Image 1 (tube, one colour):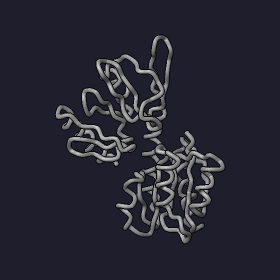
Image 2 (image 1 turned 180 degrees about the vertical axis):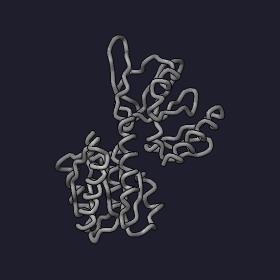
Image 3 (image 1 turned 90 degrees about the vertical axis):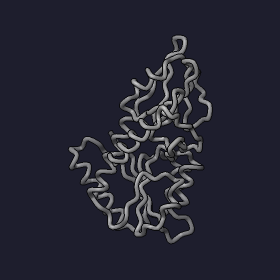
Length: 247
């Protein structure tokens, strides 16, 4: 597997140190995965690469403080709200810990305080690879003899009504794929290793596209809210606690 990784920091020494750490991580894991590393020294430079080169990174290590007007929080919001790149794992790096609330809506994958810790970065990269591996496979289904596929990472949730299943995705409120007939329980079994979970007899949700958990509801990264029915509240709490323990 090859990960496209961007490093964006105005401190050239930090960029080189991080590049060296990533190289060591790759060697320590017997080259089971490769890194394509791109270095940017300003938010403007990285933003320009989205517009002009149409780059789609898997991971961005992004500093928060920059001497110019635009900082890492500005770019994080742009990635999520203008470029609609929900699949990018943003890892913020900073010398300060005071940015918690400012980062909430950007949904960063992690936050590191400088100086950087080799072990923490390695664990984070391996966690990302596990997630991408789970989410990289397409979901396949059949409608009147025609096969359709949709990438798992794009799926927000499956919605079922009397065995008619609709797929809701990141890039549309109503998927441009046809509705198909299937039991939601069968889809749940099929995706049991891909972090999908039930919140209701009619909803099977992608864990990685949930922005917020509450006792009786979840908020998805597109802002949509789904109720957790009483039947599934205990199982959702157990699943959530297990995931937190794995982090």
